[in-house]
Amino acid sequence: MLSTTMIRGGASSIPMTIALSRWLWPCCNGLRMEQSLHITPHVPSQRCYSTKRISRDFSDCSKDSPQSHSLSLHQTTTNIPQRNTIFDQNPITSNHQQHVIQSSLNMSRMIEPVSPSRQTSSLAMSSVSSRNHSECGSSSFSTTTSISSATPDFDLVLLKHKLTQEDLRKVHDLLVEIARAAGKIMLEAEHEFLVAASTKNNTSDLVTQYDKQVEKMVEECVMETYPTFAFLGEETFKHGTKLADSPTFVCDPIDGTLNFSKGVPNCAISLALTLDKKPVVGVVYNPFRGDMYTAIKNQGSYLTKTTTGARFKLPLQPVSAPMPSLRTCLVAVEWGNQRKGPNWELRTDVHKKLLTDKEEGGAFCNSVRSNGSAALDFCYVAQGMLDCFWEGGVWVWDVCAGWIILEEAGGIVASANPGDWEPTLEGRLYFAVRHAKHEEQKAVVEELWAIMGDRKFVY
Figure 1 (tube, rainbow, N blue to C red):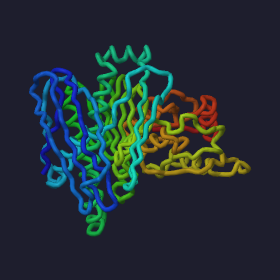
Figure 2: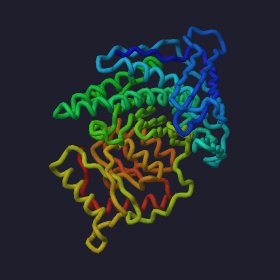
Figure 3: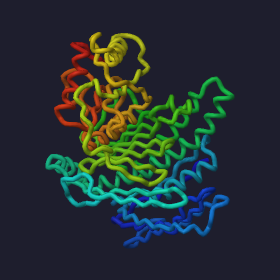
Figure 4: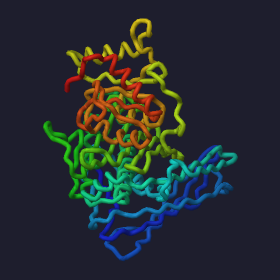
């Protein structure tokens, strides 16, 4: 049974100082870690803040490890009326999951990397520091990145909705916290899927249960904190519902459900906030790889390795490799569940021509990949792991968070159909291209459009 309370912001903006002390790094045979969370309200409030101490002991770890480190993180809580979020009881959640989710929500405040500096700069990355630790073979990598001020047009958007860049930062921090909790649920589910796979013909019902459980948790949490915002989720979506101009949370609880059900570690929770039907905050988290992709409009996008706390600005290569044509590209494609009709014929023909030798009229691209998660495909393009991703037929919740992560990494999103350089978030037609020279991005898009000729997806 699940009964979890999340700490929420109060009527005042109250800074919190999170001190992580006595971090004893892993030794050869185990780990001992003691962490303290001290939260001191700046002014009186009704919050239920308390000091918590978490200690985890593993056998054969030296208690006299010479490695000791401390990390400080300053956050500002959400400037809204005080509320407590109680996740309703759910029959598929074990008592152990209760503890896991609560620990995740608490731990997220302790290990989330330091927020980027607010200084304006034309440089994306301002400083990098690293620490190497002997014996245990551990290292810590941190990046401090300067933030550009909002563009005049986006300033007007924020003004229209009575929001600030700092408000977006608070939303970002909340979504990161929620994603960590959802990731814990997904990791705990792995055992149940292994058991189910050996005793049942299929695990589709179990997938649906976890999809609904995660989305319910997300919706309750964000709506408790931002009751005036709208919510659009895959599991609760009603046909005909349209994305509104007003602030809207968009959620795909588990993107890549087939991978999730089969134990393929390529699935993620995708969370975003939109303003005027465009993503402005995005969080995509794959707990199986420990990859947390995040972005805020005009504040850059980042990859955080949650297993180590290392944080990297995207794209990973500030000076991207040349991308003169599809010939050099590693292209992501997906197959969808519509396996007949004109859309299927177009999809498979383009896939074939991407791989076919130029002498046979193809693009002869480097290769193609099908990862089974559109959200992660967008993030992999943002990272530079993939060069582009061509897709038609997925939904707004599949791409919303990944879209802003890609754009903040210098990538572009054109339409999967020829001629449209400004696709809508709800259009279901996307061609994501990584950071590169503008003329190279344009050339790759137009080359793929040429393969399609006058044919188009129809959704």
